[in-house]
Length: 440
Image 1 (cartoon, rainbow, N blue to C red):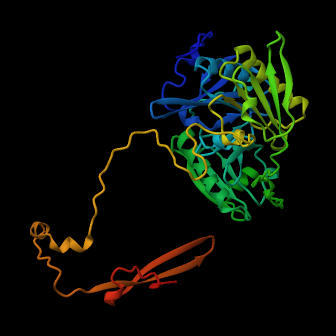
Image 2 (cartoon, helix red, strand yellow):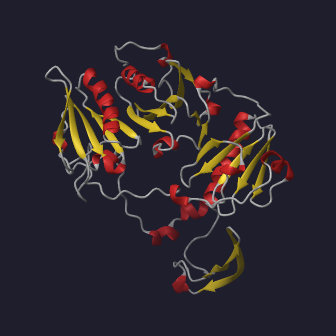
Image 3 (cartoon, rainbow, N blue to C red):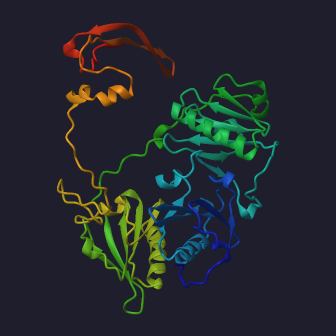
């Protein structure tokens, strides 16, 4: 059931069906983003992204609010609280910042995330266009997570280590630097194909250009090509954070009538018993630039909203970069949160390698011993398949001699599987899979 809090008409379709829904915040209103344009974000705006999925007969939600680097509005946080109330407090909430999106968030967009210049204040709107006169440059960066950022159309923004999309409307050029990796090539292709199919309705021509082989038409737009700088791969692989002990736990409470934030524990691992269902807590993992907000299921709405606001202020006071901030309802904790608790146990969790108790009903199947040597004694089967099977006669087994040829060509490996000959096997090897006949 939805909560009794005031409801906005924009929420009417929220979470009704499984899948992804995106709204752009325009002057304190929520405007749906068309499905073909999912993954496009204006850097001057804020968005709400709701992922609804079903497991058995239950419905679950992940609610993200995304902030562009140029957006300083608190409207996204307000809408997030309201939608959370509308959905009965069930969503797991996430705060996403441009360039620092969580892996879960970017996983929603198979064609990657595209950052667009401008926003509502500049008059830019999410519409499915057929703009064949477009002129823009997208910088594609990343290995596992692709991000395409719109930058000024100039050679000054190119480098040898990355891929770029030069979108000229009728023609879309995918420019590949001489030292770019194959992952970026693949991701750049996905971005370019997405622009062609979703924004141009398939009418544009897609061309792949290697550094040093630029066509004259591209040089006419960009001008004479200067000496390009080398690429920087430092952003492609984020360093793993190994120090997980530097974390603190704070409690947010208004039991005394005024909101208070107090330290519950200075150092982890924490005890699960510290988390009271009547309160809200903030887990500060500054080393990883992450702030977790745990909302007790029995905490009052004032505490829940105060916890979110306090977390925002906490980031500013600690001078933390505005990375991903995850809001967690009780019962929806993720491993990145539970790792800080020494005695955290999930529901129905078994101890060690002990017996695992399965709650679902399983059909009982009677185990009957089976003797394969008695197969030839079945005249019924022999009659059914028109064969005489009494175990007599000549038995001969042959195996194929296979050669696996490996061709090493630039950037790719090609394999050729060749069947060369049949080789007879002796009786002792009838039941053995001969792996040594595989030649490289």
